[in-house]
Length: 599
Image 1 (spheres, rainbow, N blue to C red):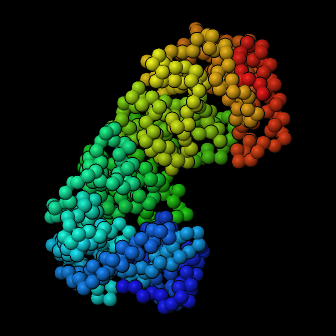
Image 2 (tube, helix red, strand yellow; image 1 turned 120 degrees about the horizontal axis):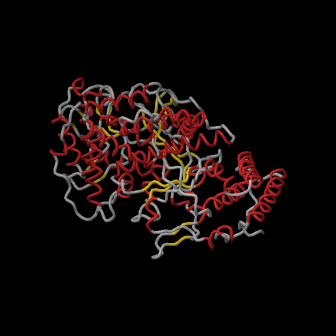
Image 3 (tube, rainbow, N blue to C red; image 1 turned 60 degrees about the horizontal axis):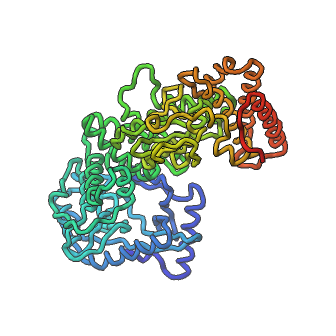
């Protein structure tokens, strides 16, 4: 089924129509069926020379590959007739090349897919579905996309679309387990019950290690080291079935549709995490509670329908809904995640010391709560969440990230996959964050075996959420504090020389304060947050010096806040940096504190 183009001239005209549909907002036409959601903005319905067509945007290479698969499938399935479906036809799309090595797969608009009505309304049976799938396999076509949302009744035939994942196999070959899973989820969703198609077909015999898809590659990084690819696949299939098989109480919400949509709505790793988290919640809470969660997610995408322009807002709501459900009951004094997110949104453009202190407090609580859920779902509660940087010190400016790590003696350099997942979740809530990949490389403090090390200033900042004082977590077993001799000398970072930037100056003033706090043996436990460090400062040095250092802390912070990180420093900022650096040098000299090598 093709023949959209009438010749070279029409090909050029169609390309122009398709390009306009993607380039001009609102150019495309709406789709009739309520289940269609295109948050990625890669599909358009348009009219060209009196014909309604659908264009799907792909890379040129991917578009050509899918067309080749569709064309071969059309040959193999020619003349196929199946009970309940009648004549079965493959839609072979046209490839329309666009600028920038892109292309569109263009097909006739076929109306409403089989996924819109119920199986009863279609007069289908599970036996008819199984017969169709067997017929495809008998002709050497393993089409994981042979599912209701890709099938249409058109012109008295059943038309199949979407061939990007199809496999051309020997006649009557047993299907792959992933294909069986996709068939089971989609067809069971149409019938509203688990059809157990996976039990009707012998899965292909396990040969060598399978090639993992992107979902499985992400999952593998979260499992124990050494987990075989076969085990990764088994784990992924079990989790996906648990997450997406029908939940009758959830209607009209569909676990299958929401699971499919999560891959488009959420960043890559969170899309996989959605599957693990929802599978866990369904197992722990039962179908009734799981149906309530599905209803909440369904409402997010129905009222109003999401678009590419509203993706950020949808991601935020989706993450809050998922993680709030995973938290369950929270202590009475704790604020719900959604309330914390509203506070964070209100602080998004608020500058100044007070706003930065509140932002740090909210960011710390959100980071702790999200990380707790992530570690529970991944089974990694053995990891410590350690805060570093400005957030740990309780003053998170507009241009500062949340610096944290999920680490342990087993993972001294951090568990990067778990950290990346938390970073994605924080990003959906509007918080930029960095994990162990952004840790300082300097090694001022080193364990006896050399495996564990810390930059001096990073060590000053370490604490676990909920503790205002220095708390090194698991590292306390391996690293003792710096000696008085080390505190009296420049750190490795300072030895590299002063950088004449507002960011470095903000670091310098905080480093001077931390040195005074950590050089006082009688001060225990030692505070890490700047507010508490400043509160004990008058007891450590003279009143005049304490006032001067407090002023320098706040003035260097204000200069850092006012700086535009996307623009080079102007003359005023450079002059202010030089002036404040001079004051800081004089104060350090009075107090006998080391500092950066002057350049």
